[in-house]
Length: 502
Image 1 (cartoon, helix red, strand yellow):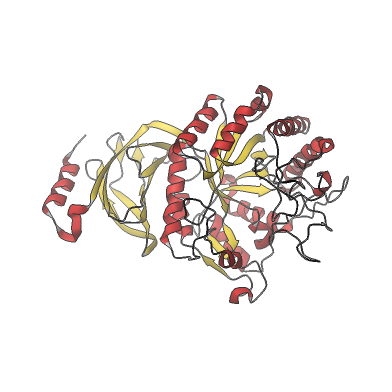
Image 2 (image 1 turned 60 degrees about the vertical axis):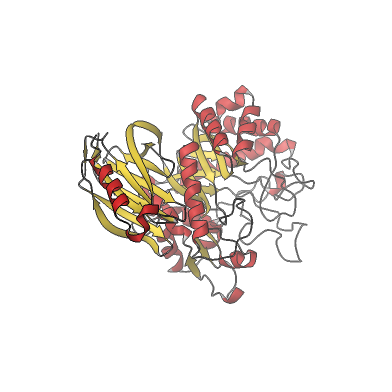
């Protein structure tokens, strides 16, 4: 390995005081392609609840939004989708906020396919289904879809409200309806395959089961104890086998934090653990040590692992308010460091954002910065917004720094340093490096590619910073299998090496 490039960098920093270079931190990143981690399926988003809204938007608004989310040239190229199998609440739910109004948030009252016992309505949920088909048109074979459930249909619940039990945190699925709920979920999965050409990769029958869901809440939800989780897992597995859904991976636990996911899985009996083929955890909370632990559990038991839901306003507690500002770098850097940390420690095979499109009016009302795009789901004139008015949040570009370049089929490989991640597409020999400098000072990074047999002569560079959004910078020359660049403060930089052969 030649050290000549590093000597040049050091000499320049020592002898050239221009632009405060003497204060620039120096990092050397050796990329090691022979240490491989997870094979990656992609970045994605859940379709609940925005699919329910956007699918009903007028043209050309909804098509433009689909391009921004799913087209890899025009937009993010998100290819992992989580489709919400709605339970459907009672039409005359007794927990209404006001007469004639649902208690649930706008478009959070997801339509169900079985509004009554023994009745099926395959015309339900037209909005979310339209979004799913629009994604399929743009992604083709890159599309990976998971079906997940937040709650059973209301008529299977004890409270007759699918937002939760009358006493928060209690199981709301009636003991007599575990088999019916398992039949409901698997029948939807089977119908999508047989009639709409959607082959679900996996099925997750519960969402955040240890949360205190209660009747009259803002969204569908159902709490499950460990024994009732086991009961549901076993019932769903039996229905999957009976209906010929063996290629669909049964998934659990979709807990709100990594530590809850660990406790839930460790609490299952061996039979339930053996039926699970993929572990899901939400990434809102979880120390690096906890992420390492869940990763090791998944690897030990031969399970795939997804980070299946994450977002936030930029605060350490992602649910704390932060002034709504679509140009703020705070939530941009927070999102990038969150993705980076999950990739380094959980090493998931998919990383899924929560709602890629959030309700513009709700973000203003609650003073938060969720979503990659904000679009008005509410009537004309709400907060002075036009109907269907939408705007790209700068977080969109943080996601683009990853999702546009790290595609399905890439493999995460080792790279020295904690600032970034490296992915290699072994078929095309394309190498992708993404680094985040969350500090207030600039940082010079030097990249050692000496473990590659051959490399391209130049590197393409894309950057998002306080003054840039996915800006394509001037190519950098590779010399002696090495290159260097000064990373701006509070920035995300993606390096694309078109040829890096082993």
